[in-house]
Image (cartoon, rainbow, N blue to C red; front, side, top):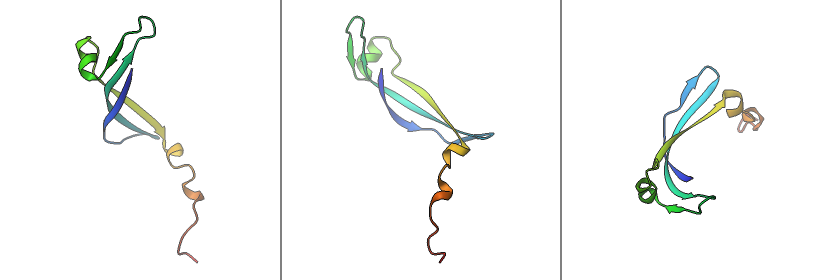
Length: 77
């Protein structure tokens, strides 16, 4: 199932991780077994499938800021 992220939740700091939830709305469903193809949230909802879902993205603080110190300082000559 393919979808589009329509809204990002607030950033949550949990110990050394940064967590953000994204609300995703269904856009397309293609079944490789029966070749059923549904396009758009209306068709997907009419088939009794979830039209939206939440994806949780996590990254460590170390990963988030890797390379931050590698940039040159400007104006400190």
